[in-house]
Length: 196
Image 1 (tube, rainbow, N blue to C red):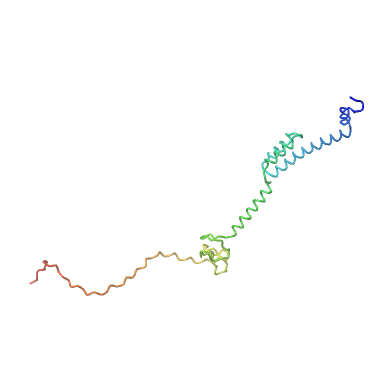
Image 2 (cartoon, rainbow, N blue to C red; image 1 turned 120 degrees about the vertical axis):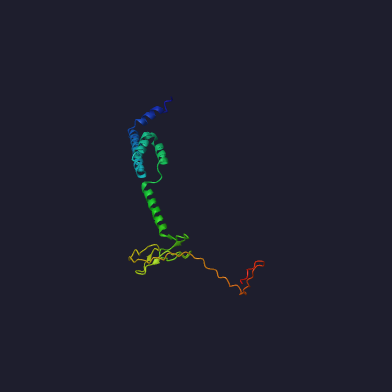
């Protein structure tokens, strides 16, 4: 080797043996290990928020620890793929929203006959004229037609008379024109003997 050029191996050894480079390398290793352990803890807490199964949080943290500090990024990507999409809080909020929507739909009443939307204070369905409510004569509040008494004041409703069986209406027939009675005739050849 020419005398003017420095030896590359010597330069590399000087760089590695430099105390500042050694300290920086140690700090990088410590940072990667802390990131690795912190990611395992994050996976544990994240899985606790997403499932009620007590084993899965430990399994997800062990998955990241198993991949070592050098490959834990692949474990994080794998965890992000397989973890449940929603947290338990999001599932709870969604179920509350669904229940609220269902209660809102149930609040909008439907006519029992035509299934058209009716208001809760209507007496009659405007579409099919089905009686939806009746007014209590005692307290003037709305009562269901099938209630035997008012739920608000206790007034007993009169029972509707039982429907009568439908009778056939007698059809009226016009009288036939009056005819003269015909004389009674006896058949020939059969005469009664005369009384003497």
